[in-house]
Length: 279
Ligand SMILES: [Zn+2]
Ligand SMILES: [Zn+2]
Image (tube, rainbow, N blue to C red; front, top):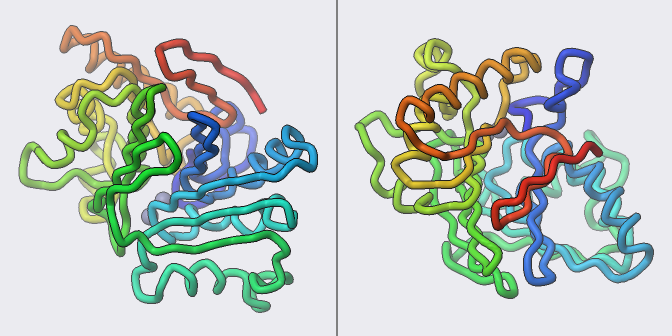
């Protein structure tokens, strides 16, 4: 949930310092959203849970900025021959997706080359922005962010989640396409890196602010907003303030929408029951 770079330390321990990584389960499918540094701990917990049984995973990448792919070389299941991993994402900004992902495992950066991995990995560039993963209907949409970047909408009988870890609101008023894409989500996980004043100093950087995320979520009628991509310079107290501010905005509009900030190990049960758990 952290943006830009991992930030371990005493001041970020409650929300966590790892970068973008979400696990979504529905209908027997395990879908991972982004491969930030949080992917390492997810890999450990999957191996522990499946204890040598075959693992069939899908990884959806929003884009290839470091904070969204750096966990991949440290994802233990890729060293397991019984793991099958399908990676889907848009092309890297200048090189293809395969080059972007295998490049970070070249010997300059990492000791194990991608070609030597014993697991079965398929990397596919998104050709179609509408596809299915088992019973889960997936839609992708371009995000306003430097380079090629998308967000996802996952729809299953369990509910709808949307995931835009890196996105800046478009300058020209209501973004109707975005409102429609987010419409009625049970959980909207959304870039809320800045407060209003900080955002004014970072226009064009490709990230959004809490006030705009709340406004967008209310327009789209979502049930729960999850603030995401916390700034590396924001400590836990600052994120607490963002949550407080967002809840005040929601209360002013007399809405029942829930707001939380994403935190490490947070579990959301679709269907309204929220369970919080520490890793
Ligand atoms: Zn990012
Ligand atoms: Zn980015």
